[in-house]
Image 1 (cartoon, helix red, strand yellow):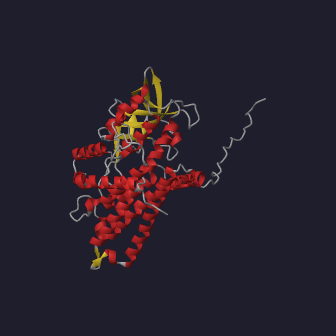
Image 2: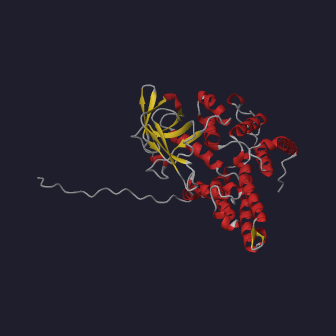
Image 3: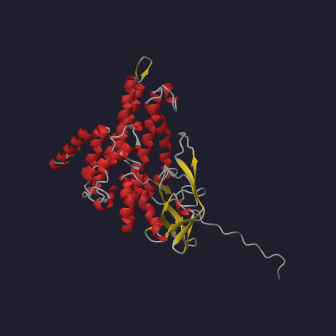
Length: 407
């Protein structure tokens, strides 16, 4: 098997390395970089084609032709140098590709440029209090009043709603339609009167999730993406981008290397943790899974290049495997630190600004976010392996009751 990319791509790889060598010191580092530095770095990446690479220039991007191998090389080289590839989040990773695929021209020109520059932050209004993982059962409604949608009543588990400028949300616009129909996909400014955001403090100690209440919130009719009642199709496009954004094998590899560094620095019984046979064996098991993820990523890349439909299964397993693996990597980091792994917040002995503890709890949430592991396994079984769906219980009719005192 020849995994070489060829002369053209190796020349491009040298260009990427040269950019990193010249500008890498400007990249944001952990939690010590101000927001302006983050925005400046994002602008520099877009200017040179290392962020928003294939987004057309008229929408604020670099405007390069799609090239999966060049995108792969960028990810590899930035990952190897441990340099930030720029801003992400729900707007850049999820909404922007959805708008490129299904949005109107006006929506693309209004929302994509400030989003990719980090000037407009987004949150996702999907989950509701009584729907669990059954997203199609949502009940938040939007009714037409002249030239506006009027939205009521609530969303929950809305990440970053407390700081977002905009929300992309699913609402029910045809309440009599079957549950997967009659749903529409709306873009909602978060400063609209009638919106109330209540933070939900999660186990990381941070208010990353929120409840969002709508009381007669009025949104212009043209803030709909796609056609009225066809929001489920738009939502599935967004979900596909979301699952991909949770599964970067290069980020996982980088975190593995940080774990190795941690094991070389920490001691156990007077010797480095990396020298402990049991801990080293555990590390090797994780390394094998990291390498397997990277090989699967190459399989997906090859399938995309060759338009091979047989790579569906490889794509489906990415989110499941990556989130569970990241959680186990973070767990081992905590174990490597021993008693120090129990520290939190502002302890003077905290390692890596508490990132291992934070990420351990964060990735436990990511195992649920974007579709739980149980749901992912069902999708893999049914769509990837062609196994039959689980039999659905038939609805039982209420027993007939004889009329009381009738003739």
